[in-house]
Length: 192
Image (cartoon, rainbow, N blue to C red):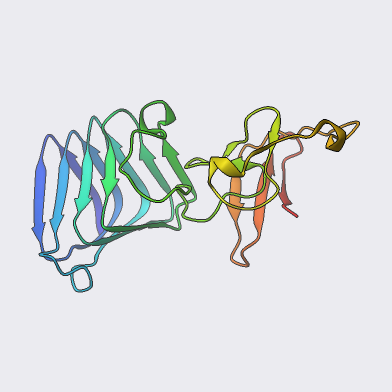
């Protein structure tokens, strides 16, 4: 395993498949282009970063085949133009994925199926790529990521009182259950 890979104002072209294990992968105004030569099965690439992956200053990781990026730390896409794209992309095991929502939000990515960044449908009350709360005056009582699932609240169906818990994070358990972070009480709550 390599300790650290720092790419600054550089470009790497890989023909075939990439297998790389590093502790820290930093890209500053750089490109990593993986050409699978049209064979998405054989040319599946894997980038493992045990601590940190950071893309800054319009950095790009692109594969025309399958790409898996696995880590046990943080994935950070900060700033405009930073992009990770593949025919099939898998991001897994990161405890934190940070994306600059102002510049990388909905409408700025590539065309694809509507769904969250985690590839798991948003829980009740949340929708879209970043699992945002449904707009004020609407609700969603099913899982899914499409905004059309957020329906207007009927006046007769509104409760007389409500408890507001600001959601600071969403976690998906191995058992398929969804948990939300209640930072006020320093606890994780299982969604019903």
